[in-house]
Amino acid sequence: MSPYPADPEWARGPMRIVLTTYPDRERALTAVTGALSRHLAACGSVVPVDSRYWWKGQLQSEPEALVLFKTVPKRVGALFQFLAEHHPYTVPEIVELDVPRAAPAYLTYLTRTLDPASEPPTGGGGAVRRPGGPRDRGVRGPARTRGRPHRRSTRTGSRR
Image 1 (tube, rainbow, N blue to C red):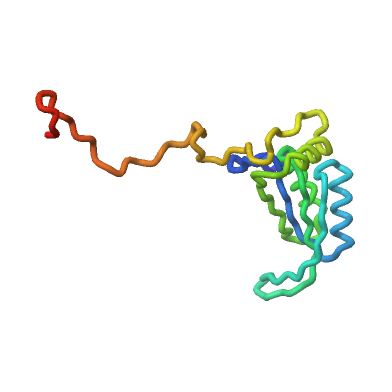
Image 2 (cartoon, one colour; image 1 turned 45 degrees about the vertical axis):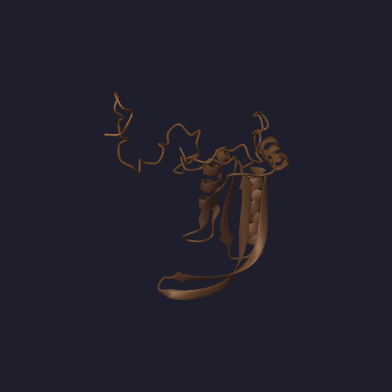
């Protein structure tokens, strides 16, 4: 069982971006190839970056390769585990970003690439409800800001 939940309760979107950095382009491309061959991601983009960070009390500055993996929620846990097991860093940066909306055609591509047996999400361009929306059953409305309403007299109709 993976130590990483497949779909955190805060995540509502139909796709995820998982990002991590590598010391060089070659190792980043190796990770992308490994993740793609295992169908953990549909795409991996490698971008050169200049990173500055604290490590063991020292400020470091290194060129790195940032990888953006595009995947579906049910593959995130396995992708995290793969990256953690095959990463060259002692403490790798592996971060998941929830994507609340994406173009419907791209969502169809992701789903057909990574999970051909399932149906693509419908209405990815805007049908995904955010938590706390008016139709979300688990959310209460705002608290009252005024006192109790005044009762009207049954005889005169005036307020007491």
